[in-house]
Image (cartoon, rainbow, N blue to C red):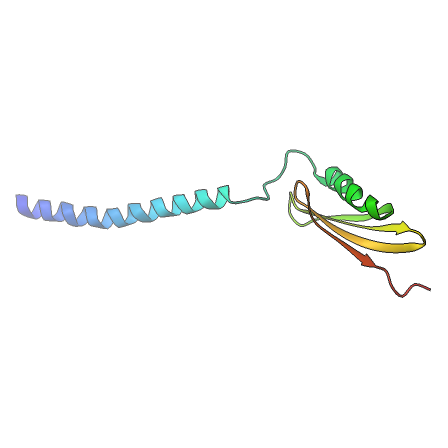
Length: 112
């Protein structure tokens, strides 16, 4: 009787150890995903800071006019605008993630 109880306890612990390992792996995976999430919601709206940073970047190319700001996530924004200098008007796309991460300037063609 004692031997069968020991065998039963060993078999039960093997089954539970797989379950415990699975739970631990899930918890570790969730923690890694949470820590790796770069676009956590900021404490303040990043819109004004994004528009200011993108305006500063664009001002090297002329007079700046902001057209739109879109939120790709809570902390990743795209600012659209135009710059005008010496009779030329160009559009820009500025990506902001706490700082300017990408800035594209394009000619506006097809104007009469």
